[in-house]
Image 1 (cartoon, helix red, strand yellow):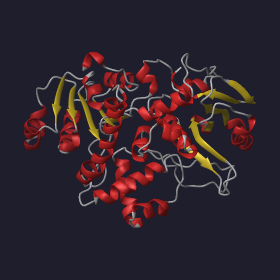
Image 2 (tube, one colour):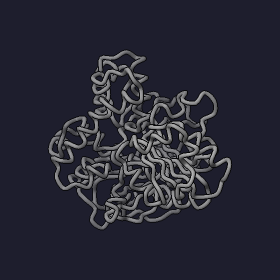
Image 3 (tube, one colour):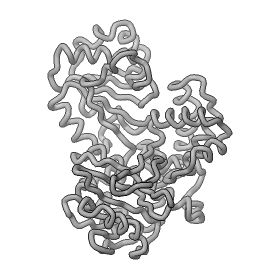
Image 4 (tube, rainbow, N blue to C red):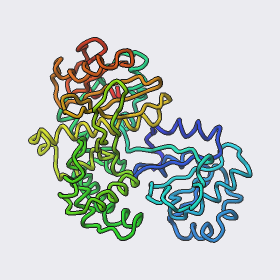
Length: 414
């Protein structure tokens, strides 16, 4: 309900863009809260996935747009793709600010041949990417993005009620899909998340790319989830799902279009040759990893490898959400050399090629050995290295080496 609205990281960004531009496109996975947020900024709404409202837009979208109170929220645009061409024409005729908010679950039709010429959104719609809830959103914290705080040299402190390892696992299992994260019952949450994965495989994916086998896609999605926060070879996933290479490539692209998975590319530098070029795999939300694995906190604690993957997936999701609203426009990467001797979980690059390196540890005790890869990267790139951070599950922040600190994960929402 609107009176229980949770303020989102994208709210100030949407408000700013609408104050100066005619149209904004809000994209994200299903059930991340796009419609609820967009309603806060709209004067009227058209639900294009509701046939009675969509009929007029299928018949003549230009006429259907006229006379609606602006900003107009056009919800689930992919149900009537032609509405984007109508928005283009309307904006070309009148580019006044605050005219349209377009929302939708990203589909493979986005830029995949729906329009034989230029996609109608280019130059008319400014995209805002919306992610599942971060912990800072859930607790109402006004903390700035971690990357911005590091660049400004702020002291990084834990949240006042910083959790222990079990608390972090509970947060990761809870995840950020509002309908699951904000319920009290763990059983209800787990059933919602399992249903979400099932609907992706059986309904959303086939609707976006007809002809895909939902059984094989579900197997691939499970294999992918179990390798979140890793660089697993494609053939490992294809073998687990019993599919060909070509099918695997199609599944991966489809799940990326649906924002269920969120890979980050490998980092490259002229100073460092022989770096792995493969992207690092992540589920879009840590709760989906847990749902695919069918585990509870007790089960995760019994499997060290899975625990590490879950915690890193949780942190990466928070950093992605922050990166997409940051005015620094940080680009997130990972780093691993070809020999596997050096690896950095997340490399955030900002203007001028400057770098912040982040390691994620699902442990409460951190030593200088946990920062060895950060130290190596600092020595390789020199002045481009802003800082290195080891995010951990312990209670304290402390220096490990020059420009390198150990910081509790809860600093993300401190």
